[in-house]
Length: 447
Image (cartoon, helix red, strand yellow):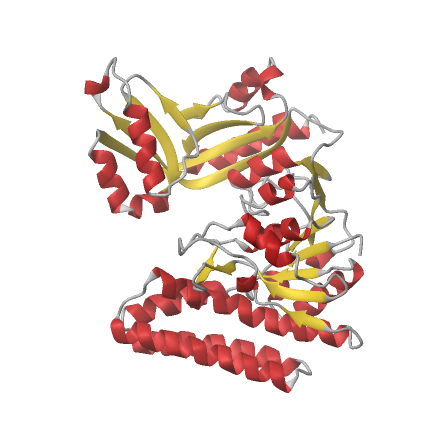
């Protein structure tokens, strides 16, 4: 087989048997070799609630969560002409989940390892159902269900594991190229066989890792939107689908708030120069968006993204005036706590960085920062990013940007590290109007 297509379908594409049937039809039409699926929509959130309620010893809510998960997947299994083997595997998944919950409830402790194991069951159940649906559409073809944990090998950083690229490639080389496979996104396992997850939204990343390991010709991401848009259509109604975009632009968009792609998805595709297609399961005949290494059209501003719920941390230490090492100590603490920095500005005695609000829950991280200086925390902010091309060379761009948001108070700016983005921080409650003005000036008028 010269052409290997890896297709990934998200939670809404797995949300019902009808949605699965649409996804199965697409995978057949696209000649997919490997299909990677997410948990059915809402299931991962329900599993998180289940784990939290169990660890809190709330038996009533725990049983309610368990019943909801089992009822949904049992009902979906009954809708199809499933095999006895599939029904027994689903029962075994329920038993596994119940035993995990019993142990957590008994100990009133939810370890990161147990948390990852519980979350893995969402994808393991949905992939089982989808395999049955696909098999019914291809009765004369053997569809094989793979356990992604045997292929996506990771370290033991539960909650957000790091994949082991070389081992994944070795495992993928064992797949027979004339078969059709269905597997799970989001999950993997460490060297000891413990179940790990790649982090929320990690199914895209899983698909990209499989595509890289298989040296795929195409990676397809099927979701509930018709491609990558110039901005979030919920923010700006005049947002347009982008026909073609470069790896660099797509990577910046994913990193700075675009919901269509997981931020890590692009890197495996870049390493193997694999084109990535993004399309809608519900409007499969629309052109969608292609992501490639190079594109012909390179506008100054391709898209505008927003990351809400941002906090600005300002770490200062006046005693470091005319001294060295302060910045190194700050970033060492970020590294030790496995926290990434989105944007940063510096002065002689202070460093200001943006992080998600969730980072503020990490009390050890904040205490580590306090050990080297005082901290000022500002919340309720949004990071707006202009994604484009050759921004350094656009002489009038800054003037156009500032005139578009002249009534907005900009708290921080970051420009210069990349020619593909221009970032600035504003209050969350004015971010939508800010994006609408920028979109009209920098994208709509140009288009």
